[in-house]
Image (tube, rainbow, N blue to C red):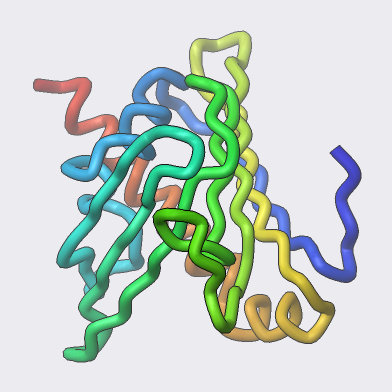
Length: 157
């Protein structure tokens, strides 16, 4: 995949949890709600229709304000690649102000963990810079940490 540093933000981490559980967390609304926004913010609703063109809608409580994200899945390769965007909502209705397309890449590591790459692809340099300035690396890194904590708790049950 060709990355463009002018419009793409990339976070790559090696996670000490199996790829199958990372996939499960990203594709199951009950799991996603446990990690998808940095605490103390929280997911208040999540609707997943895991198919190309299916909706991926989330609502968050951020400091008492409700934020809603509506999107669709563009590509699904089980346990390897998940691509979603807010450029469209369910039914391929174009969004008036799209922000980004997210690409999640998962690979096994030799020790049974997961190489996790999250790409936020923006339509302009200004949008990319705005996302970075608002804390892309800290926010998305915190989300990954929260997901790992959630998976480790799942594994202990």
